[in-house]
Image 1: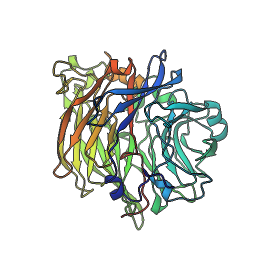
Image 2: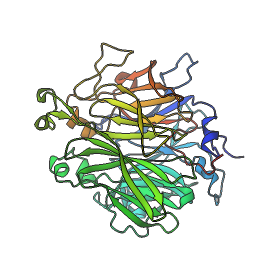
Image 3: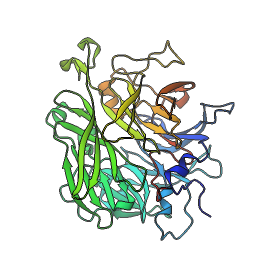
Length: 464
């Protein structure tokens, strides 16, 4: 039988059942408490709605849980050759600092996932030549797992392959990487034989915090890399300009007939602005266009962390973007200013801002409507959208060593949800859904994954 959470098309996914649970990566930046996956109740009719109802503790600490993903998704309908029955059952949870990867089984009780395997850092290094695993996607022939570093902890980063059934590390995906060196995210257009990768920096550049000389020296990644999926080689590399530092999240169109997508750039060293870019495939390859620019906000230097005081402004710091399954709504998190923006991207070249909400922020510390007397640290960072586009989940931590640079008094932990108007645009805070540090046993929280899939975890095979 086909897993009922595998959907042939975006339209089918949108009309599927709503999520009942959310899985959240939780970690201790000090490396003393064991990291964990928290399970939250997302059923609005439940007596425990919005509460942590499950807790899967990992056997170790110090992993820096970051991004994670399902072992299988709707793209499994596009590629055969599997020896066994694939189902969306296992959470694959990398440790961005430890380079360990944990496999958690969500059956038989989805509220109590259990660790069933650990892929040690040594296996990843020996078989694929990589470390610091990051992004997971179920793909043709294997599970793709991007990695920031090489086996020695420096570069180049790239993509490792895991076996769909055994989860053994198969090896490196790339056969010809050309000039690509930095790595971060990986995505694709399955029907267009295209893989896209983005760029942050090597582990040595990021693990001890943000070094001003790396940023002002324009040493971080500033390219989009386009690959032949079938030939596993780099075919086109586009430089966004070295002033545009850190090309992070990739969000391709969900419609498998389309070959365009969006990329977020954290900061411009020329004016501290952030930006969103559109890639499109044409007859002569890919082109890239800047479609959104978000300016920095002037601020009293006395209210800024030391790293920003010389500039007298708060950079937006676009650290995540997410695209709804119908490809209409693009969400952009501004982790510096504390803003979540919603854009109508029905016309991808001409986005139209339709909503903006504020939470936290370096200067504002904007409170949540459910707790108006509680200033929030951190800001909207990781975004996850339900398949029907009506619910948007947010967490507030970026990366432990960088949290301390921009929020030196701490970010704590919070997770919340907004309800989205998917007809006209707009965002409304759900005052029943706000969890704080104590709910997560003092751990910070990063990515959210939704039961049955979400907007950033699936690729689709058919248009209808």
